[in-house]
Length: 317
View: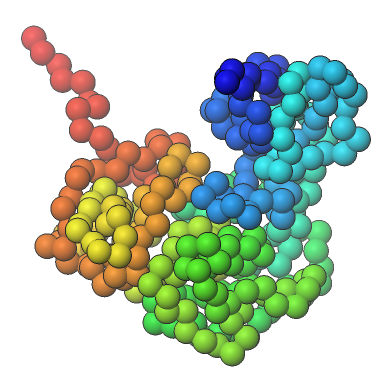
């Protein structure tokens, strides 16, 4: 059987060959340049994610080599499959930039300005999106949406006002936990994440909804308000665990482990799901084998006051 031939797609003037079935977003990530669209709902490990937030919209200037007509509307790159000869505009399209600014404004309409007290600050996808595409002020004059507080357990904190209804946590419960006690109820601007009856989320793998949440709607209650992300030192660590892979990131302030999270790739997606035991219960140094400091993108606010070894030149006579 002959190998399936790759298809050619051009993104902002740069050509790349990708396997058939690749989405525009995946192709852009293969290029790994400034043309990668942001994604607030798409998550590679989750099979049903994508197509909801519209932050990854792109312009398809040419559908394919056989049919070079442009697509009439901006397309979600996470759901649009490439075709041979397709030409895509991301950074190079004013329409895309205008649409992304509009989507960002829409996401921020009801989102509270509580970054100073939010544990997600410094690793929040919405913060990054607002920094690049947000406006200085809001045109929204109505009262922001408010929800009654709902207690979902001792380990996970839920702030409904911050939720952007990306459905990632719902898909984690469906696909990783194989059972679900929470979901999206109501519609439109009344939609909210809820268990309906304030039921505790206690599945052994449910803590992973914290890592996939792109905003501060779901945070680690055991580490609540203990430290800013840029004040903590991050280390790759592992332990023998009979429930998960045991490969994590431990966040330490001094010699104290204040938080444990899953390891993420450069696109902010979890590499391996971890269990609640590793995440919430193992906070002693003796519990972990430290592999070494985690590499942090120097452009990230998380890199503040963090320096890699052997980066300072040594002057010799």
